[in-house]
Length: 303
Image (cartoon, rainbow, N blue to C red; front, side):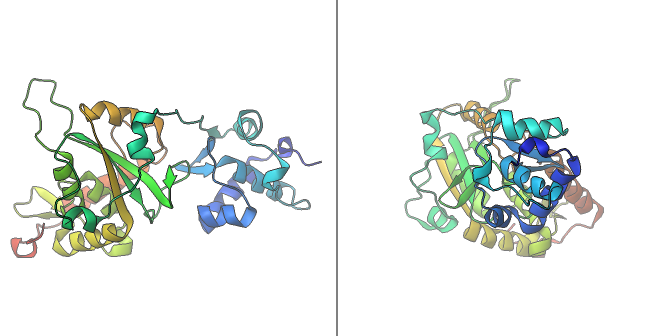
């Protein structure tokens, strides 16, 4: 009888991970008949993987005469899959924390809003209040590990943000930004003023032909007029937002980042295995922009 404990070779797990990377997560799960992991995720090389599926396929690599295990042949969880993978020296994440019903407006939204619905509706549906917002994506940008991410109606939650930011602790004046101002800027602004646009643009640089450059006086970095337009078009097709008006939104944001897998968030998210990869990607893009000349003002009408 096949047993998970018969997986003795770490290389078998590595081969299963490599196959998952080659096929893509959804194709890998479909090929072997596994569902996305709800609790335990395997961390390898900055990526997150469905632990039960990886273990089942790893068994097949180690015992080719028997083939991979199917989902119904073994159970997942702390004492089975997680224990076997940890015994082989891998890191397996614990179950995520459960958030209360007060977060349902973000995590179980009745609807999400597209770029056109936010920018073209009269009146604008986004309130002029403080609050938290959550970004769901139809297409996950290349290289972003989405295992463990919240999925609603085929859309994947990758990023949360707030408006305004937490007031300075040195007694400085607080920001007067609102949910409406911040969300609208993410949809139609530029990479200098939008962390989300900077991140997505860096991830899509090859696919969309984007390059971060210094613009204007040389103190700002954007993807220039054409690049920002391409990024806005991509967001029009793939990015959807919902929000929750609350006081002191920074307190909610910290709880969300600690409780969920949000690969596009950097602040307070050092535990995520994609953190260092994304941080380095953005750092390299900025360094390259600083090494190039400043783009002239004539090209910057929309940035």
